[in-house]
Image 1 (tube, rainbow, N blue to C red):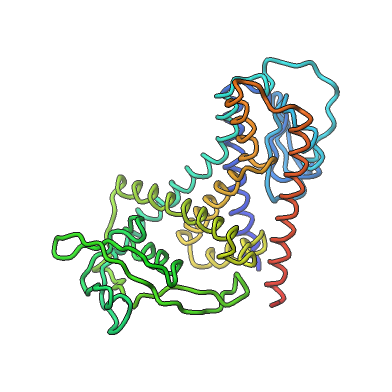
Image 2: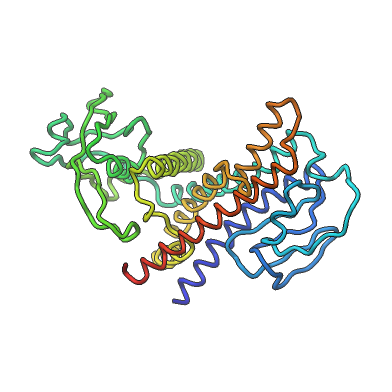
Length: 366
């Protein structure tokens, strides 16, 4: 239990800190006044002031915020943030809304960019230390989809569904997520590159996260995962692997969201802080590298989810700025922006409640 609590604090604390530091550093770089930097929402628990900025730890550690002067929708979020009511102040050249569009785009995008950079760094470290297991088919089951498609032992997988595969895990994940769908795989055989289409058979298995039986794809290929198939990576190759894995997970999260909206994935698969906590404990007990790999995956999830065009989230702010750019510098009106932000806040709170409910149902086995 203690390991789980500590691991959860590390995972959430580090990733929230990374995200908010992106906003903070970018705001300071373009000379925007920052009155508060908070880890968590709600009432202040502890903190200190340095210069114009108050650095605080707040009561509900499920996020964080950087309070910048002069944001139109600040009054909507101030209650959630637990910030004190500010006395009326004169507009300043250092206000967020008085900065040029490029500067505001930079400040809003910086949190997501920091999460992605963290993921690249973490995946690079893991790849550099562990290396990669080259995806070479060790056996092909008789009568399997792989055999029927023409795959053979010794084939080295280069791509699945158009996505490069440098490691066995990437091949397996690409197949698992496409049951019953024609999947084009690119393999190298005797120095020749071949494109082969295989249709994974559908296997039904119970999933603890979804709390339901889910469909998974299998093609009947086994891979050898011994030291003989492990490839050590130098710094440049490890960094390239980190970038590749980050991009792969960006696409995976994006695919999941599309499938969720279209009904191909169950809303039961959505998890909240409790699931993150449980998984953090499991990976922490497995070792530092598995925990770091897990943190990279969660960091990508946070980055992609924050880009959803929902007011309150970074994606919502970027949507407002995009509209302003398309309208030749004419911003969305304050009243309309505040109203949309209120709707966005209700939507985000609803999603959080739903995720919490899913977590609790998993705990009780429902």
